[in-house]
Image (cartoon, rainbow over all chains, first blue to last red; front, side, top):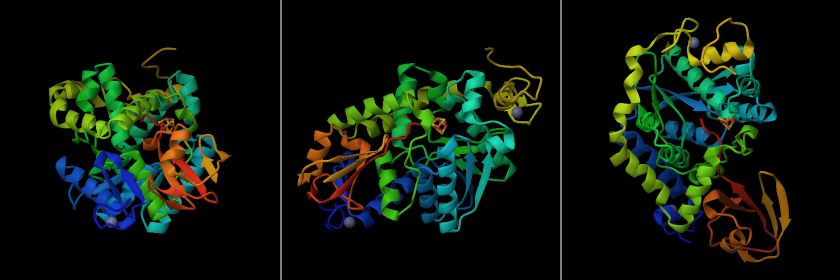
Length: 310
Length: 66
Ligand code: SF4
Ligand SMILES: [Zn+2]
Ligand SMILES: [Zn+2]
């Protein structure tokens, strides 16, 4: 196969684009897709300070790299989840990447700074690990962005992640989730703006980006992910994609351009009822926010019970 | 050729030469889900993999839901 742009030998084929690229042209393609996503959804401008949620995996490291390549000012935040060897290795990769590229990395450790790890939280609250993990990460990224004076939190959710989430939301017709599923969520009182600049790039592209640049990312899967229903959705979507290249991208892009507006009103309704969490000040509808409630139930040092009972 | 697979990590010995696309089909792997890395270099699906090649089929699917 030859590169579509320059006719040199290709290193990767992208059936969705009916194209193959050489290394240089592929990297150009990735930058171009991110540039278009940022401008299409008015995510941020050159003056904005961006906090990138980095996990040490391919998506977040590639995102951080791409934002810097495109000239944005972006610091990273890594959250140690206490998931054994997986977390240790992820942190090593993240720190090495930041060092190699002279980037500013902030690190928060769930076990050291908040007294629990994802697995314990999952067990004690009988939630799925990804539920407890996601809640903790969203809260801490948001807090860190507000406290650090950042304008926006950028996450490495890619086209495949978002298409899988969309399939899940559609299978259950979740109006609130559908209303909130968008590549940019504007800042509201107590919440930083959130953006997903990789929505136009698939996970195969993100892995290839890292391989071509010699970015050593965490290749192993998080052990908690097994059996996760999003993996099932990705499998279904990839079967569809193999039969009909471009399906995933069309599914997601047409939702953003034609479907999302019908759910937008379902997304924001609760805003008025929010006030400050008595523990941390984050906006919440209850007395304490979901994060502080989770933490109290796992660590057991706060006599507050709220939310789901076991 | 030596074929390295991950999650779980394992190694297969498969007789070459063989076009990468055929290898994927033989192993029942959806090409959307892997990168083909031949002797340390990323290659497209129509690449002829020689019998003495070391081929990594690196999965690209992450499972996190958050
Ligand atoms: S797979 Fe689940 S538990 Fe593991 S890092 Fe991702 S969200 Fe957290
Ligand atoms: Zn080229
Ligand atoms: Zn709180």
